[in-house]
Structure formats: structure tokens, C-alpha cells
Image 1 (cartoon, rainbow over the protein chains, first blue to last red):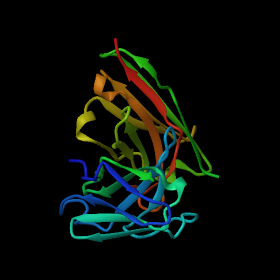
Image 2: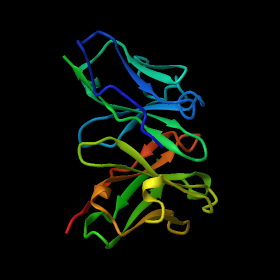
Image 3: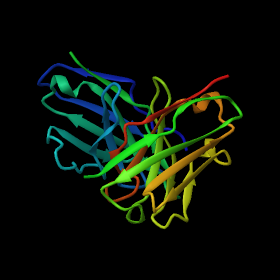
Image 4: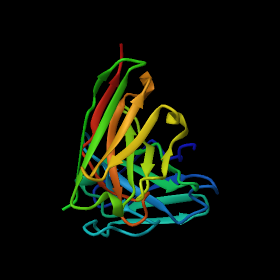
Amino acid sequence: QSALTQPPSASGSPGQSVTISCTGTSSDVGGYNFVSWYQQHPGKAPKLMIHEVNKRPSGVPDRFSGAKSGNTASLTVSGLQAEDEADYYCNSYAGSNNVVFGGGTKLTVL
Amino acid sequence: EVQLAESGGGLVQPGGSLRLSCAASGFRLTDYWMTWVRQAPGKGLEWVASIDRDGSGKYYVDSVKGRFTMSRDTAKNSVFLEIISPRAEDTAVYYCARGLGHWFVFLYWGQGTLVTVSS
């Protein structure tokens, strides 16, 4: 049950695109198409942004997209806006009724 | 409308015990798995425990096995997390969450309740 690996920080200017990676193993990210991404603003509960690698829940802007290759998943935020500044966490199903989260990435909009 | 409301957090001494509650509304517990996720101060999210729709299957992260017990009361439509002999590293905001389709896709979250373990 080791945490997934995310870069501690990422940044971009308004209107630009930024991609955040999430690296696991063949037992979690690589073994299942069950990667989700969550956005968390300070003092708030997490919000689901992407599930099952690339599916967006109702109400999430299409500026947010997800992908996966091998043991690494990624979240891309296009057309960065000020309100996108937040912490982002990935998680993956890891088999045997276990779930693992990434360490989180702080996204700064410059 | 789905709503989750945690309560029961507070200051607890190492070796003590605490019971967290999560009152659910807008759906029935018998239709969904429920999960506890925690976040230590300034740290990331950590899956803690889940209970299945039947209430018979309970699953825990290794670090809390034998110390935490998740349960539910369908009449009250509430889930609980009992913390026995807490450690300093259990200090965190504890969130109650419900899945979207798959139980491990957490669409609905409560506001969280803070547990502080200190003497």
C-alpha cells in the first residue's frame, strides 16, 4: 500500500496548459483503468474531477482531462484559470479492496 | 440531494478511544459502499477504511488494522469509525465519502472532522 508518486508542485500562466503525473505500479495504476483525480482548495473537502482515467463527472469543465500510459497516469488542465489553483490528488484501485492515493501536487497559477 | 455530515472529532489522549460518526442523507447505505479518508495536517489524502453494501465486508489500510473499526447503523443511515489506542500519527481530518459507481471513486464527501491525538 505505497502511495502513488506525484510531483510536489506544478505551475502555469493563465491560458496555458499544465500536466500533472501520477506514477504507480502494475499492481495499481498499471493494473486497472480506475485512476481518479481530485481537486482540493484550502480548508475544503476534495472534489472529484476525473474518474476511470479520463471520464469527467457532470459539472466538471472539459478543460480537465486525464490519460494513462503503463504505470503512469496524468491530469491535464488546459486554459488555466485562477480558480484552478489548488492541490490535486490522484488515486487508484489497488486490488483486494484497497485504494491508494498520490502524495498530492500543488498547482500554482502564475 | 446527497449529503454527508461527520461528527465526533476532538482531542483524544494516546491510548484512549474515539468514535466518529457520519450521517448520510439522500440515499440508503444499503445501496452503496462507504469510506473514511483522512488527511494529516499539511499532508495528503489517505484511504483509511471502507464498508460494503451488505455491511459484512470491512476493509482497512494496514496502518490501522486492529485499532480502527468501521461499522454502520442502517436505521440511522449512519456509518461510524471507532479509533482505539490512537497514536500521534492518527491526528488528521477524517472525511466520510461515498462512491460514484465503483466504490473507490469518491464523488460525495463530508466536510470532515478533526481528530487530534495528544497528551
